[in-house]
Image 1 (cartoon, rainbow, N blue to C red):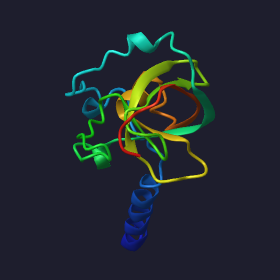
Image 2 (tube, helix red, strand yellow):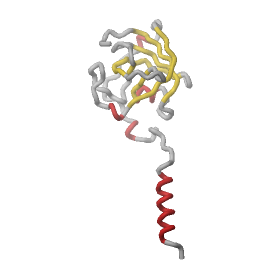
Image 3 (cartoon, rainbow, N blue to C red):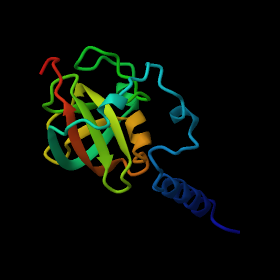
Length: 155
């Protein structure tokens, strides 16, 4: 008969190893992240052929749960399912087109929040934008940010 302590130790080891497996941040099957935005979608069609005022290429990330329903720098309530962005310097209300360079998907959005300065990131996107750009699984991706209209909100 086996030693009962070795069986317990083996079960304990299996339990510890099960916590070390990798788990994706979000999956498309996760119902919590399939809801629609509660905020009204803005119509940015008029910006599709706008002159590009500035272009920046760099890494984008997105933010979701922790900040959902909290007040943004612009004073709006953050809706993680909506289409918005946080930028370290652009004035609030700046209209930008963000292109995921790995798949050429684009979204036109308005900057309504601040992000802390990070030399490795140029923009933080809402979960809704990350879904449109198909970057939820990877979390961060290389993007091109094109300014289509400078905002007039607070700096």
